[in-house]
Image (cartoon, rainbow, N blue to C red; front, top):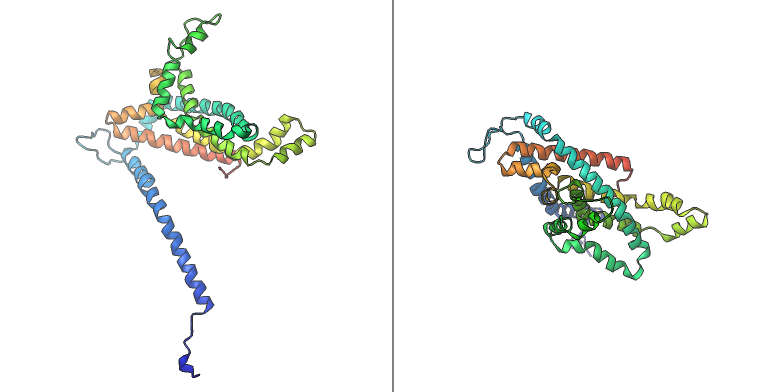
Length: 299
């Protein structure tokens, strides 16, 4: 055989280099849908919102707005609407705390005590999502009405007469708690379900009380779910406006109601400034909370 009949093939180093290049391009191609979604539905709206917050407030939707870099829109918004900001964060914090108090025992029972009823209880947790957010909130308007069974039962107690539940902060916080409770229960259940029961048994074997075992074993292992549930509950509760609109009154308005009212009134710069402030404050609070909680594993 002569040397002309031999065709040299690619070396192993060349093959591995081509495979690595293909894998690199495959990664970029897989990122394209997510990147497109992120740009179209987060970056573009956020940039548009920030730009709108700097428009000349004397403009209108009919005549148009001019970009005058009117930074005073932010100071004016804070000066006029700070009570609604404080009220929103207080309501959201109370609702989140209530969701923790209600959701943790429920998630614990589903994870460790439900047995063959576990799937049924999980379906019961997500069952409210089968109806719309608006319908669920309207149902509480009936339950907390002046002539409802709950209100009449409370007013029948000794020493209580003429108590109103609807159109009060209690009604708004109740609606927030009810609507966002599944967002607390599901992440908590996901974390609790991963806990090895032998760890809990080891705590008992070492003569630790149930409270000590919970504090030193269960709670630290459930922290990722607790952090995720807190964020999923607190963030949407801060910007919610339906519960305050349907269950509250003019004195229980949240910042979401003011933003909606300003957009409806074509006060685009003020509404955008309030939205940007709300977003920045929430991001800052979430950042501090995650650092304080000491966990970055949210699921």
